[in-house]
Figure 1 (cartoon, one colour):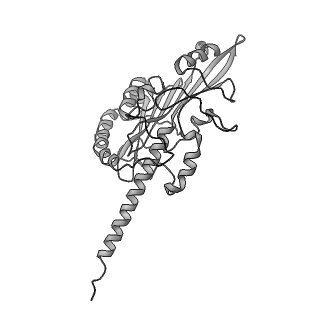
Figure 2 (figure 1 turned 180 degrees about the vertical axis):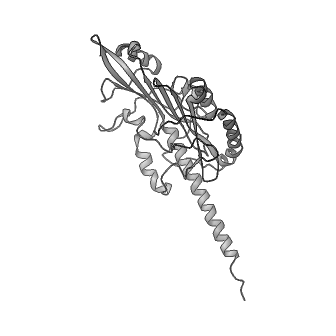
Length: 297
């Protein structure tokens, strides 16, 4: 995650509306060119992602559209507490790639969104809560609250201060299995696919070449599909603790939510699209070169 800047333009909402209008007009063509996912890449649930079924923190759900996420975050972080970041694809399409909210020293939230041509949706959320010493809950109370929200945590090897949950893309709890040296707790916040930093000025967004490295997709697929952390939905909570009068209390809560299947699917779709664009450009250049050859004499 990068540093959090503070928005300085009080008219940022108007800027967002202008950018989103441009995005809505331009993305329809991009999505029409998206290809089906290759073998091994998880298909989206029937009917697409339903954000309401996926886990959230403070009302921000994985799978939300950028409009939905903006609406919630504007309420949580009003005014200059919210910073909006923009990126641009090689085709010139600008989108909101990251949202960053900071409420003094007590709380912050980073929301990362996927890039087009797939629908722009919330793929990762990082929330940090620092609790005032006078309001620090007990460890027992905090874990009970987390279980009420996310269900019973998975059994992992990470210790009592780290809790992990896993779900499928329809929000149903699952218990993914893997080799002895693998743990589901590694799959939230352990590195994202295609998540970018962005620029705070929509007129000068950062350029993004693709979601994946500049290597042919066919060469990348074996490693992408064998990584167990590229599948499913994860929540990981890390608790900072202390002791007050002999009772263990929680001083900090870090919550990470990742929709890894969607990130993998969208990163591959991005790569397919940009490779198709590059191939089309090369074919056009070759055609132009042939047309410029001297005629037979």
